[in-house]
Amino acid sequence: MKTAKILAALAGVTLVASPVLAASLNSKDRARVSRAAPRDRDDVRYCLLQGKKGRDKGTIIGAAGGAGVGLVAGGGVGETLLGAGAGALAGRLIGKSEGTNSTCDRVLRRNP
Image: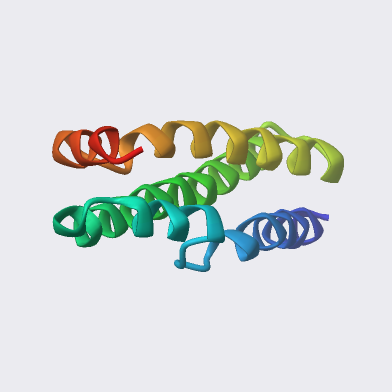
């Protein structure tokens, strides 16, 4: 039974983590880079990628933490997956703000 819970948690984390592992910009962000001042284009691209990496990392860590809490608390598969989902959401929100530094914040504010 313990093995089934662990496998279910790993499957849940994999499902949550797989779409967020790609490190490329979407069309909206690419348009933002092209609108930026020529001297800031490299910085804007770098900062957008850093923010995305922070969100992705936070999502994965939050999902794993939520699944771990669900397992330790003795919950079933549903509770473990629910904990993984809630952890992924919280981790994404936290990682979004922690992914960039003050220099990136200024560059992105200057180039909306």
